[in-house]
Image (cartoon, rainbow, N blue to C red; front, side, top):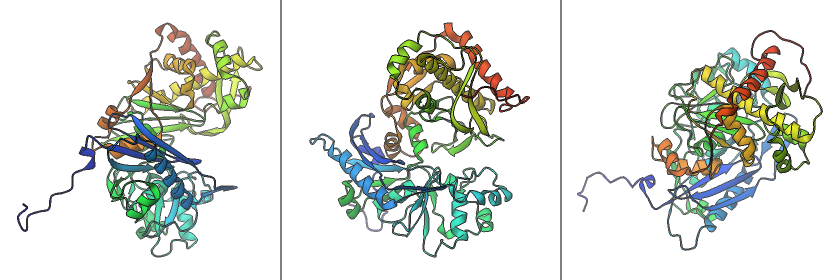
Length: 501
């Protein structure tokens, strides 16, 4: 029996359990996904719910936070209902990720006040110049901070209201009150990851009341517990710990276990995003590389290119890509150089707002679909190598394997080509996505996120580079680098644009 006056024992940390299930929730642009995962990384239940009330009007992009909540409840309810009826393991914790830079106002009870301004909402882009003038020249026009300045100037930050991000807002709905945000979701609202504080001098000079800013904790910290009302709505057992999440991009990185120096994850879909780990932030004068805090210590640098498989949709939409792939794999390394940018403007591995895709040199121009696929595929792999080279030039350790995720990994030929071009092992995990990463965050004890991810992430496919192809692929890579340099995008003299893709 506990002696009178002796300290009460702290409740056991659910992450110390070995018989629990871990719930991850991913809030995307088009829907919400929830997965229930065991200690060994097996998915025992999943659920999805669409978001239908998405409003775009010029630079404005808004969503209804009430729909986030209802969709979350449908997704979590489906995930929990999908497990084996005889599985009596408890839910150890839940963690929620959200889109980076999405901002809203809420009450202290975590109820939304008006619509949410989404991550790509550019209504306050004109406020960026004033922020830069105060020394925060890393802030970009679509970050949340310019929109927060706009809300302050419009008198929208009424007493008692609080700023929230997408993930911590839904976490607050689960906990029944506003909860702290995390270091990754706070980044684009101006939080300083180096000092681990809000820059109060900057905030004051921008006219923002510091009282509206949420406290900030490390991802994985317990920020509340599921209330009885939230349990009835979501199906998550009452009292389940709610753990601070991360941005959807960071959670997707966690799902690859690329959380130690030398390891990188590369997501190739509509865009190309590379993320890795470093003991120190990568200082990039051009601003194309950003750095999140690693919950284990150190940093998670990364960059996002505007190139990606969108060029395949533009040029080869309607074609059978499996059939074209069977033909393309016999074609070898194409001549000339192809930069597969579908739109206008590049942000990584170089920043050039006016950049346009191009296809030049021998074999360029009109071609049969298989040859076109071959040229675009090589261009994508070369841009991926250029991105890793740019990170290495900033001091990053890029010696380890690359974990590949995104829609492009369904094409085994393209993934093998990427391994050949990169000259390193490429791994494809069995389960990917931000919801899975959030489940890992829910599971991980403090300071052991990388260790937990290694234990839960399973490798489904492994691609080793073919050394016999190294020389000819290196020549192809250099042709693209020279073409980019000729245009002045990588330094050097500017020459005529040449043929555009």
